[in-house]
Length: 360
Length: 179
Image (cartoon, rainbow over the protein chains, first blue to last red):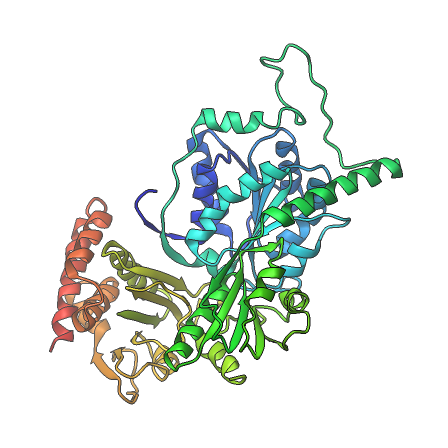
């Protein structure tokens, strides 16, 4: 780990992606993620990478499709309305099983909405968004350091499962500066090796291969019986991901908890402050923070409900999306309550504290 | 110790920079820091502001609802961020742009004609450094030496004259804060 640098989340994740071996980046600018594309524009030429500002989000995601089909580490990023435009391409990436990384620095919606932080794209990211039966692996950071760390984690997961991975961030994390340290950069040789792991299925130059290869990258299958098999194979893969890749954080979870909170991303930081304040007043409140929002830590939430927990409260910067997954996890054991903020407004620690106090 | 600071003023008065240099120095002194700016239309015409947390402990929320340090460079900033200041906290008020005074229970309020003082030092541009001086002089949030080192490495090559003026402004601010 290198020395710490004070950096915006948008810049930190771009730097981390380059260090993780991303040499191809296609995107279209949008606030509040513009520092990310600016950083890539500046840095990609220095590592002999390709930065391309596409004419639209739709073409950017299809460039990702092409590059991923060549087995390369490739990334795109946008903010909510731009991510909506990419949804068709994302479904194609999932259908064709192409490893790729997509970053969503969420802003207020629906429609063009505004440019302030929000978490209103939870459903889109975790339940589909594009058409057909598919899943994205979705990682939700809550600090600039974690945002950066997730870049290499996302590429590794994408390679491991041949699946697109989304980092679900927000405008606050993108704009905020915090100290961040980076892993060593991958060498050109290491990056080449990473590409070779996909040679069995991807497009690649025939160098060193005596027999010419013929691989097809496609998400179209006209024969229903063949498509059925393909989708069932995808399902097996998604089940494997659910078994292996669930990640979450527990904060002050104990048998003394009076209330259990659930929050993801930046909301969880605000909830932690409220929990700390309430602890000073003698109250024990726990928090479960899903780090992967798909696959979702249903069991972890169920297990974290201690014997004295009266209620589970979910905090999100939307009208109530993840709360549906929490209800599935809690399964009627205790009441589930919700507090949300919309319009790009972030709740303050004082507001969260007040909400929890109502139930104490 | 945890400092939860909000700096606020008109766009162009350098409030984001105040936060940035303090956060940077806090980090160099081994503390946990976060710097959260207002951005977009929030800043247009009205007040630009930044929330900075500098702490020996892990920082939970970078969103500050009750600051213990407030810098108000204009009246709308004082009206908005003055009242929620915590007991035991301090508010720095630029009297050149805040004609009204404020009373907050248990909070120390430091008044100074900061715009005029910056002009006297040599440029309205050093207003933010004057404010930094007042903050560290009063609270000890970070050390002067750390700031000097950081500013020097940032500006020495680019504009040595401005560097001198900035350092003079920080020192003047520390002096004023301790009066």
